[in-house]
Image (cartoon, rainbow, N blue to C red; front, side, top):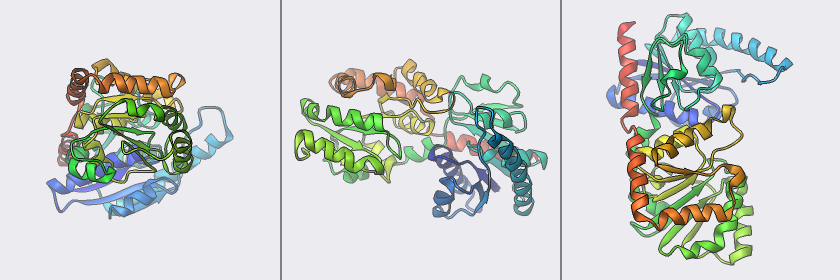
Amino acid sequence: MRVVLSGGGTGGHIYPALAVARQCEEIDPDAEFLYIGGQRGLESKLVPQEKIPFEAIDITGFRRSLSVENIKTIMRFFKGVRRSKALLKKFKPDIVIGTGGYVCGPVVYAASKLGIPSIIHEQNAIPGLTNAFLSRYVDTVAVSFEGSEGAFPKAKNVLYTGNPRATTVRQANRDRGFATIGVPMNSSVVLVVGGSRGAKAINDAMIAMAPQLSQLKDVHFVYVTGESYYEQTLDSIRDQIGSLPNHLHVLPYIHNMPEVLACTSLIVNRAGASFLAEITSLGIPSILIPSPNVTNNHQEANARTLEKAGASVMIVEKDLNGSSLFQSIAGIMEDEALRSRMAESASALGKPDSANILVKEMERLARKS
């Protein structure tokens, strides 16, 4: 099967596409890929590292207010469609799949106009503008959250697949996770992370609650600050408590996050859709702090889905401080029965076979063409 992948801007759009590629290879070792992404997006760095051929188009997103820049965006869109058509005609894919971000717009639209079977995958509970636009043109819309199918009333076919990133994480080695963070095997681990780049509000709460951590005996805390916040956060913690105790580990970034997640007892994080797919696949209880700076406030909608199911506790950012965060952590870590129920609820939401479901749909559409 020849597959064109598209998705970009953030890891939340790129990693699901890469998970699809890996699953395709597992089913069909002779599968061939082309990834079409943005010139300036993170995908231009990540995808070549995965040894997948990459081609770039110049595209930007729409601004939500009236702007001259939107006229330029429309012009870039049609230019991107022409470039995408040329790339698709040359590669001759059996299927095109877009996993989110505005770069998918011209790529998937071009595929539909050329009669190439196409899929879009929506990670969030509330769809983004690009996927809402593309839903009327593609053969299948795949959704991550059960019950969100109704968000695409003009789609030909909507399929609940979960997020393919869940499949990648399910295979992670927990022993390597313990080794990565340097804690004894089978320790209780609370992982506090603000996303790949960090989040100031979460880092401030990390700093504020550091003196209280010793109250939870036999619990290891792992703070992942993001590269840009690392030195500042570490210095602020040391100003309060001196040298770091054995139960507190402060890291700028974790490169093998799936393995660290596999050894985590409780996670504190934002509510990006790919990350939620990972923690539900592994059945990890969570405290979610949705970013207020995202389109349509979709992270809060994501978090409420887990909270309603009993898998998570949500703290909105305006209510976040060191005291509120530590109280929530302590309430879960000191109640083993509660933590067990949350883990079961998280597992019930997980779709560890997501990538396989999505690839099977890709094969079905490819056979029909």
